[in-house]
Amino acid sequence: MYNHPFKVRKAIYEVRTDMNLIHWAFESALTETNDSSVQNYIYKMQEGDERIQSNFEILKADYLGPASDVLELEKEYYKCDLSRRRVSNLILERKFDEAKSLNTHKDRGLNSEHLLRVTNMINVIDTFSSKKAAEINSVSIQLVEKYKMELIWLIVIILLTSVVLSI
Image 1 (cartoon, helix red, strand yellow):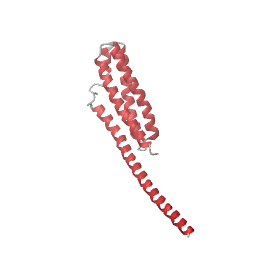
Image 2 (cartoon, rainbow, N blue to C red):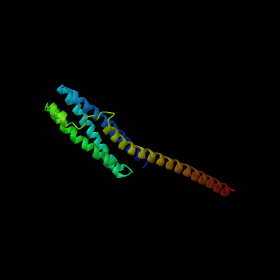
Image 3 (cartoon, rainbow, N blue to C red):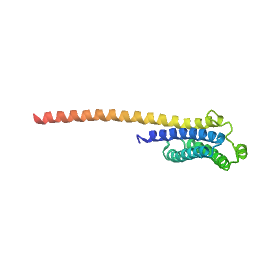
C-alpha cells in the first residue's frame, strides 16, 4: 500500500510527458518534408502511445480517486489519437493538403487550449495522488511512532519482570 500512490504519480507523470512528446512529434511531422524524418516522428508518437496505454491501465487499476477522472482523460486522449492517426496516414501517403484539411490539431501546440484542458485533467489526478501519498506517509509515520512506544513499554516490562524475578 505504501508504494501505491507513488506508482500512480509515476504513471500520471509519464502520461503527461508522453502526451507532450506526441503533440510535439505530431506538429513536427506536419511540417516535415523528409520521409525518413516523418517516419521518425511517427515512431516517436507510437512509442509514446504504447507507454500511455500501459499507464492508463495502471491508473484505471490503482488510482484511488474517482474513476471518472481517468476515464475522461482517456476519452480525450483517444479522441485526439484517432484524428492524429488519420492525419499521420495521409502524411505518409504524401497527401499533405488532405492531411491539413482533416487535421483537428490545428492550434493544438504546447500552449493550446486543447493541451491545457488535458493538462488540467492530468493535474486533477496528480493532485489527488499527491494528497493521498502525503496522507499514507503521515499514517505510516504515526504507526511507526506508535509501535516504537509499544516496543519501549514492552522492553521496560520485560526488564522490570526480569529484575523482579532475579530478586
